Length: 184
Image (cartoon, rainbow, N blue to C red; front, side, top):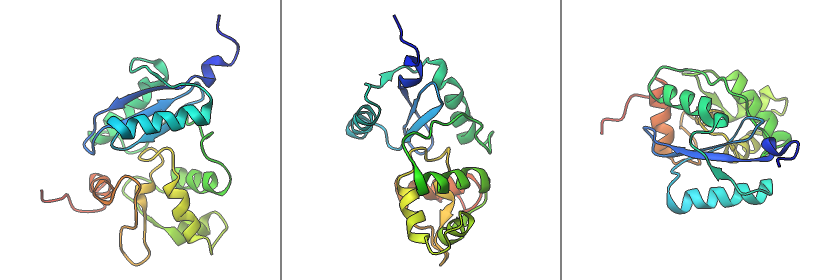
């Protein structure tokens, strides 16, 4: 018999094929919990192991789960150019403190097709000298693409770093019209 709250503790996951490669999507009863780039083989297994350790429960592969259905639909629509904003419940339990504050500001304040500098984002959260800390927050983002860390760029005009790789960042920015499409 299921105990109260068990559904919210349960982590379900699937892998969705996208234009930037396979993305692992994991969710709880609270909302989308994790998005992982290049989610095949060892990368997928490591991500699932980290989730199990952090959540204290083994993630269950469940591509047909109602907890994932809307996230899958919206991710596919985004990559098809049919969606510019994600409207999903998010489970923020994998991140806290300053990093969560920065990522929430990013999610709500930097729309599709726009970019923001690390320093600008630091100012937006009331920490104008924390540009490097914003970079750390981007690197710890458990919900990339949905919480669009690819939209954070260097103040010198460079695209900055990216946990999913610079080519992935370029492709996401091109999809949103910020950069030209790659020639090949």
